[in-house]
Image (tube, rainbow, N blue to C red; front, side, top):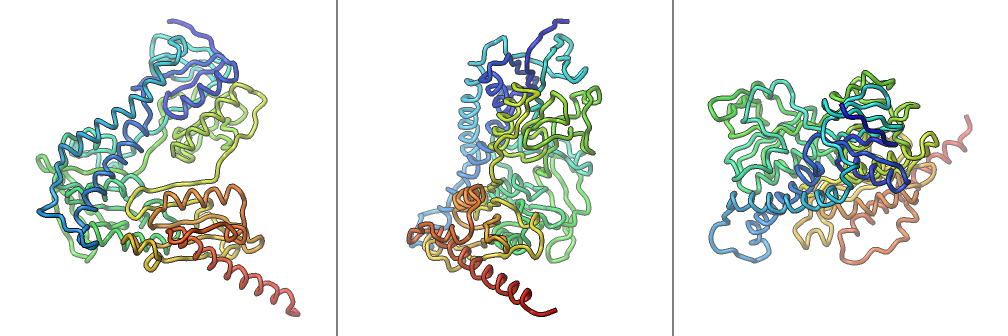
Length: 476
């Protein structure tokens, strides 16, 4: 067996792993990038980019089919060629993957090692059966994989994951989607708009990562007008019948139904790729999911020379977070034991549905009741939104009663990807609602709806503070 020595071993060459490797090399350390699977990030291969390509095709079909409301009439039926749609998705997906591969190819050959790594100790790794790596520090950046509930595992090749969708050569006729989270909601709506007969089933009422009950209910009503969606479904049975999936479920009208589909698309979450790393041979403390306990500001696992970044730590499975975490982990691995807190940006999550969903800053579920007020705008009558016939959705902004500081927001509505960025920036800058209202708002833009919500929050802050003063001044 070959033996290699390095300052830092990085396990995984995805977004977080590449960022960690580059940070370590920039700090002047020797770094070895270990990868057992194909090069190319989850985002480029099976995540962000191919899904947006499918969504773009779906939006084109939807806009063409609904142009009459503007007085624009498209002669003849709108025809979706599934083979052409998927050909473009794969062609452009491969182009994005190619950019990532070019970056990997530019990494010196002596800094790359092919194979799957397992820990022998905190600083010794065995890569397959060919190499033992002795590193002063290790960065775990092994990413995640889809999680499939046991009742669905017997569906064979009729069960598809989001990874599989982008290998289709054509669009199927009927698809059952399990899981209306970010992936399931995006893909489910896109397929429906491309002419696929879709049913989307969820559990516990969760929808698109929304925790605010009012915003979630608004989203539910909006999507249910377009395609079948039951976020709190009662699925009685799933089984494979020939080349189809049979689903028996209780419908929204409480009737029992049995339907067959070409595929069951399972989007019920992802699990970190840590179970094959031999972590039992390290000194690390593991949680119930087998993930090492770590400091999210330094990415260090306990007091060890091991750091964990990206989807592997199951903290914030988003590309921009993975890139930040990889950089922080790489920098701290390089300077270990002088570990320092890195910059963690304000939380921001976007769902590219239509309307879009955004959560910026503190989500509703993370706020302590009685400590904040909620400002609201319904986009139903918002000027620019109505002009574009995008006047659907609800925005809630949250402000701290004691300080007036803007805490976060949840929304479904037009331009949520852009408004979400503005709100995340405001959180990171620790702006108050009053300071935000001093900022310019052009006319007519969708952001005027944000101003409405902020004005509502400002009014409620004044009322809450007045009530507190009155309570303090009232004799006991």
